[in-house]
Length: 191
Image (tube, rainbow, N blue to C red; front, side):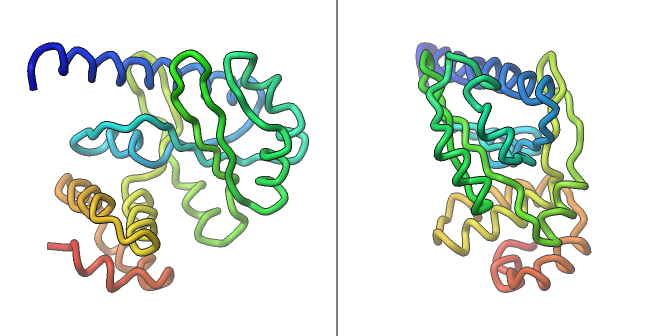
């Protein structure tokens, strides 16, 4: 990688961090609980990899969906209808930052036992010059195992190996992977 490519990567990562700071600040101000997950959360725990989207699990209610444009502001393209549908079906919707074109995926927190447990285990971590709620390392591993199983993505499994290499609670992983029918996928990546 030459110097201009490296500078481009730093600029992109800086844009993502600035956007993340802005979005979580808006969610905090609106009293909406959230946690960072996905590839940006991976970057909090293990060797970073590039991404152009931000994944957030949010404890959204219908009132939040109805005011999503007010919450995020005019810098974002977001569909109130999509947000309402996501709340109704515990699904997801996204917002596009109109200047950077970075996508923020909002996944409405599911009311399943594991997903409530996962959300309760989130951690407040410092990123750059701000704090953000982040999924725990073990729960990120379980999510990536689930995504790998659904999508057959080797990239997700590589992320899991990267996370496991930094140390984690393997007892917790074994217990919940059994409950979530992920044991076979977990055994592929555990040393």
